[in-house]
Length: 182
Ligand code: SF4
Image 1 (cartoon, rainbow, N blue to C red):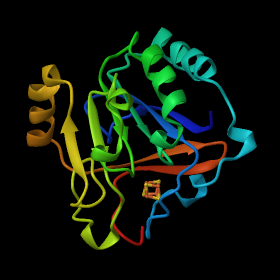
Image 2: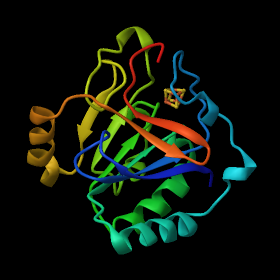
Image 3: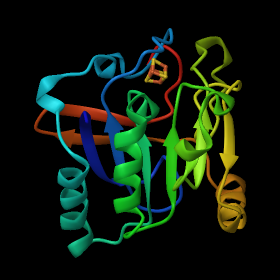
């Protein structure tokens, strides 16, 4: 599998302090995508679910992990590896948001296993309305885990869209739902 980034604490892509995981590889090529550098598989990002899980475990030793946000790239482009990783992550937190450029109706039911919240659809720059969690208004947010409905309802009622910058050895990585032309 190919994963380009693991960041913590991500506080702008879901409730609480989350681990953000950016898959590498995406076939959709949306105009205005904020991560075009993650479209192609890159050998330097080749890894395994176990390696990513070990990294997450090392974070969990000293920090509270309120959930995971898995984005990219398109995690569903590596659906089998994604499921292998999600099974491991759920042993730490079962609050897992997954983004995909595919429509939910294009995905097999087993691809939705272990996902609490799915955000689907390609990004359409002209429909970017500065919303919480979704890049454009055509995308839908599905609360698949009904036990999480009240938590996410509260989140949507109390939070606003924000950007968070991480200063890393690779430079600044700006996380969140950005406005067009960011
Ligand atoms: S699906 Fe997401 S990562 Fe892929 S091109 Fe569209 S906006 Fe970019």
